[in-house]
Image (cartoon, rainbow, N blue to C red; front, side, top):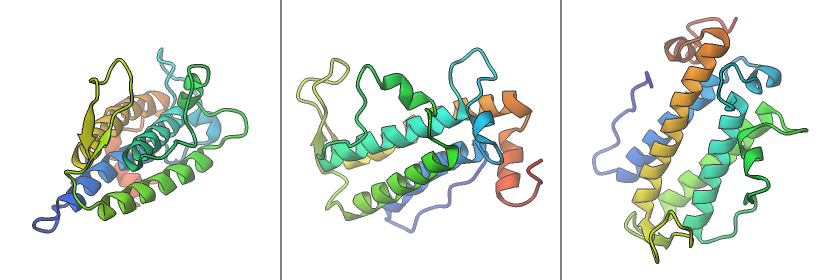
Length: 183
């Protein structure tokens, strides 16, 4: 993305990781600037991805990883039958609601990461075929994974937004900073 992540205070690894995750979140949030729910739910390309669906997916994915790290049940756990709903706004959901939900998840993630005794602390991975048997990852790994996961989808969001109305990531950064109109 076209923004600069400010350097952390010397020795503040947690702050640096949080800042890089937040930078990727910002790329996705900017991709929906000025859009209606209808626009955010539209599919302007051959892909089934929508901007509203990407926002919802990354919010739910971040929550899922947070709950794994906290070793708590995920109150929004998806099943095979509901997996597709994590990629689209369903009846009764608005873009504003999903953004607010993600803001709450992001705040909880930051609070959790700042409070864990060590970034070297680990949590177990679920018993799934794509994870190693008896696998565990560190809190540092979690944050790096969120950079990767959210960043991947921020790239998708850039393409979808540009396809939707021609706005590029540079224009969206300018809009977010108040340098351009949202027309």
